[in-house]
Length: 355
Image 1 (cartoon, rainbow, N blue to C red):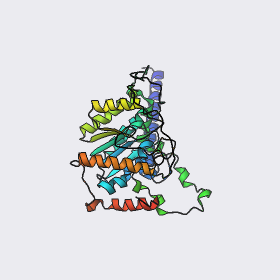
Image 2 (image 1 turned 90 degrees about the vertical axis):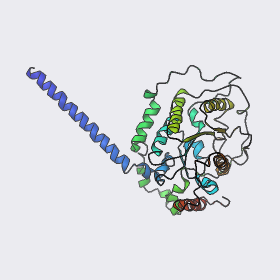
Image 3 (image 1 turned 60 degrees about the vertical axis):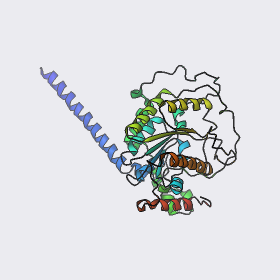
């Protein structure tokens, strides 16, 4: 080996060591920031997109029996303190705006690092997140045409969410906004309850009422709007994960006028039937009635507090009637008495007259 070759080789090795050292320091820095200033626990104390989804990190270890996953439809529909009050079940809602099925899968894996849930409830609107509703299907016509073959390991959506979930600094990088005083808030009365939302257990409370009118989206049809392939891939992983860990999986569809249809109902029911999973579409149940004058907070996408009470009651009754052998009523267990405190804080903070 001549002198020039030796110098070139030495330079390449030196440059390589520098690059690897930089990457190592960068990863260590991300780890430190994600574990301290931008930790998931810290993020639940200020306003941000994932504030409620990551509230589970504040739950007492190995105390949660029910985990509810999904997008904004889910965090608007299930009230954990009501499940506790009526049935004695401990639950947490792990949901965020436009949450994908892949992120649901990642979060389920993370929740089960510290919890041993007996039940997982997955809201189905997340299956079609980002897919425009097709209301022109005819009887018997499948909706999914010309889909590109899905390759899971190169999904941009999955990769970005996996990195964000691993390094929470990417999720909560705007935390600095909380550190800067806002003049508009100077005269606002400070209630200590507002600084700690753990009593919500992931539920987003909104009492606003929006009167709406039903549409034709849930008219019966034989059409089937297939679940997108990427969603099926991660839905299958969630299904397998629950079976392997002896967790009962339930699928629900919260009332939604603008993002749901009978064709989508047919596709989800087909998957549920094929995998022996209980499925409740609250848009189509015979023993559940939507109150279009009182149950919604917007133009038909999300339930308000009054609608959420009905959904929560229905699910609680179903679990009690069918799965009381695997989920215990803990209302008489002194170790869980703090749930009574959370209920009272919930009522006080949200000024609820009739819980």
